[in-house]
Image 1 (cartoon, rainbow, N blue to C red):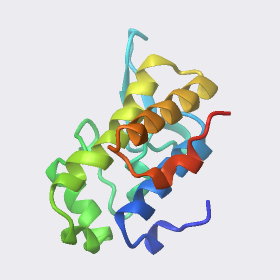
Image 2 (image 1 turned 45 degrees about the vertical axis):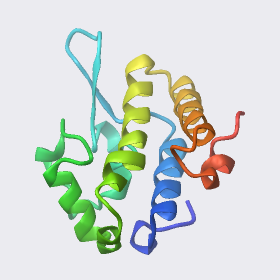
Image 3 (image 1 turned 90 degrees about the horizontal axis):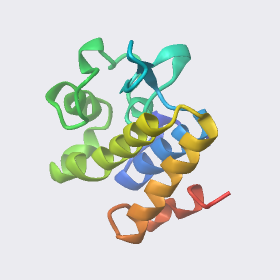
Image 4 (image 1 turned 180 degrees about the horizontal axis):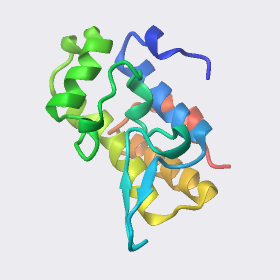
Length: 147
């Protein structure tokens, strides 16, 4: 990965970093439930795995209490703003839109498959579909090309 999270200065860089990090990780950040019928997606998962938003949270800002809460919840949003104060220049829709979408695409793909290759393909497809309807910026297209 070419960009360090501390060097992120705008929304486009943030989204690129999160998408690239999930793809390079190659697997979801989940904790399987006891019945193996569903999984709980985690900001910090087993063996160092992170979800899309989890990659944006440095260890110094991560708290266990964030687990199970969406990106726009108070604990997660405040941690992101402490790390990326430029986020205050955007409306609250930034958290409710693109970052929540990436969180949803990670979590949705993770609940459909635990196969790493299939997970990455599905995550990339969901990002591509969002680019097509202009819900995510076209600048992400090069990261999510079909294999």
